[in-house]
Image 1 (cartoon, rainbow, N blue to C red):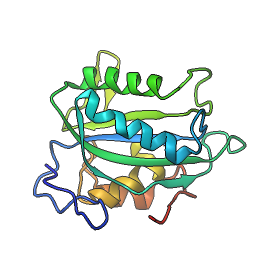
Image 2: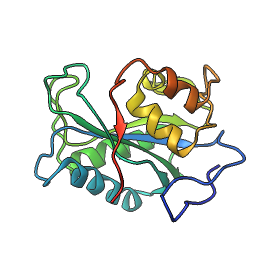
Image 3: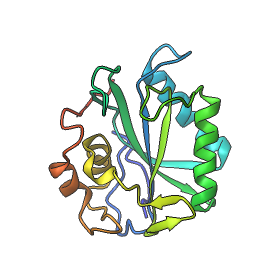
Image 4: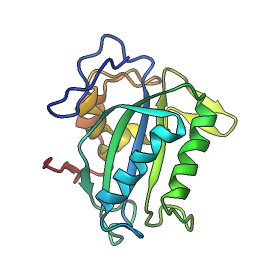
Length: 184
């Protein structure tokens, strides 16, 4: 598991075993009541600890065109590796609650949103857990997920296909325009 954060750039130290990694993707393309999408994402992250979810490592924010409709506002995305005592289904409910507290309004599928939190992987769990499909069924094809994950844990292996995050990022077909923002 990820053992500690690198204070210099907030990336995970090399981990001997990522099999137990719990990975959450964050996205925003509607700042809502916040001054910016970065502020909305940071507000969401700030809620994690109060909800029993500790952030162990976090990626840069990545920018990309909205998908599937590039005429929607552009997205900011990132990935965090977390630790929690919650099981996968409870964690999904927690993530939905954080979205709600941060002003997410659910309208049409893929509509602009203030905060989108997706459970990408929960250790090596795979399959349909009563409506929760793990790992996330489309994450491996999305550069705006695999790029940030490859920053944190390039050697992480997808629980189903067995490919590493860095390989999946290099071959991702969705969000090919995604790029990391420079840190201040």
